Length: 432
Image (tube, rainbow, N blue to C red; front, top):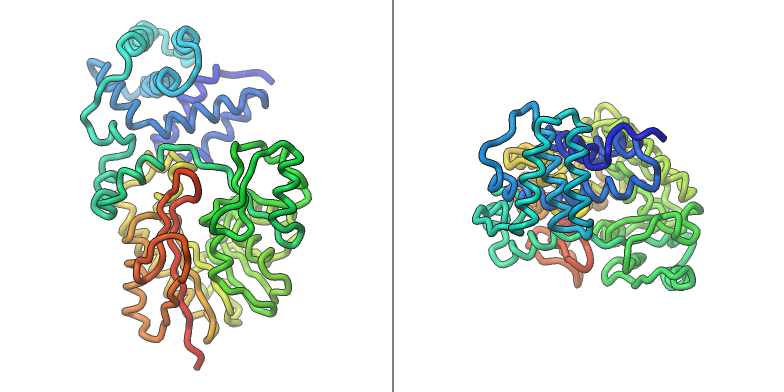
């Protein structure tokens, strides 16, 4: 396969796209496709690592530059960030980082900046990482996010930030229709893959080290799926019973849809809705691999008039669009993409979805509200607002040994050795 650009140059272009508003999920795959398969993990590591430490690296680079680069040369700024990431957080040989970054600068058609790039990186190697006072640099998060976390979680904010800067463990959900957890742990042991049972999720297994999914026993035959432990807890809260109609609103990429079907054999129907035409095929791929069936619908779940057939649901999982601040360690580009101004509009969407789903819930039915956020504005405060509007709704206390009781729900904060940050609340509709 012909390589259009060196790996560092590709990484710089990916970072520039993220800065301009594209997620890594959007802009990284086209860059990966320009490389041979054996080179792709390196590019992915450079992009994810540079996003994870972006604010610290950016602080250092501003410290070293006399003046910002012109907008037309912005890609070289990102090229130097990639090189700084390697100098500070990788075991790459220093001479290779310096020499190959200069060559990448030429490949990006910026030969006039090779002297600057060489000088900045040699100074960075010689002087080591500087002590930076800016809060965003010290914690490698945007200022607004640090301040919001400090306000919301005065005793935990530094632990949350530290957890966000770590790589998340790889966690599996065993398909209970095929294996029990102990059986699959034995298969992993026989395959030489270190693993342990998760503490809270009944079918969860956490690996000692991430592995490609093709190394997992029986993966292609639907034995397991990759899913964080916190996300797996939704099926335990839904209290699924045979014969129920279940709705997974905002379903893509389908991990929870599949978990619902695995958790209870004999459900009458599972309907999975998502408004993204691009993401729904991923739901079908997951269903096909696991040999499961659900009714997929492309629609805005809140616009029930456009898709609902009038038959109410016994169970609804509402995993709402959110700031995703509980999964930053898996998606470090969130630090660059999310803005403080996003939170209020998101809260409006979340409350609107909750109100719409309540209308199509069967009397006697149960709704589980979920986010992968750590901001109370999107979590227990949404439930408080909803309960003030819906005086017939009953809040079901979550009796669990995980997370923190927030009175109107339960909050998991990201755990360096375990689960992501997640929020759950359980509501029931009284029988008429």
